[in-house]
Image (tube, rainbow, N blue to C red):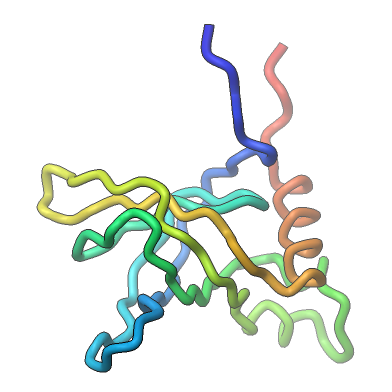
Length: 131
């Protein structure tokens, strides 16, 4: 029997994001892709290339529907447009049959209010537990 090590439940949610490796050399332009699932601790994303384990990525996630869980002023629909910005570390790299890669990303730094809003959104979106 396997022991679940994740602190947060992963929710299947496919949406777009842009990401870029944090490095001292110039040249990397941000990649645009999609993620397949997300939790309060990280996400699984599609990447056109592999990144080394431990690489740090600046992430800008589009999270449709999370606006109503944010602390903000103004209309909720404006909050949905704002991406969640986070720093993530590559913790898993898997080559796919299609030639691309799946990257397991662990959040390293997320603005606390944004993380709280994301967790509330995911808890509200989670499928009911199976009995």
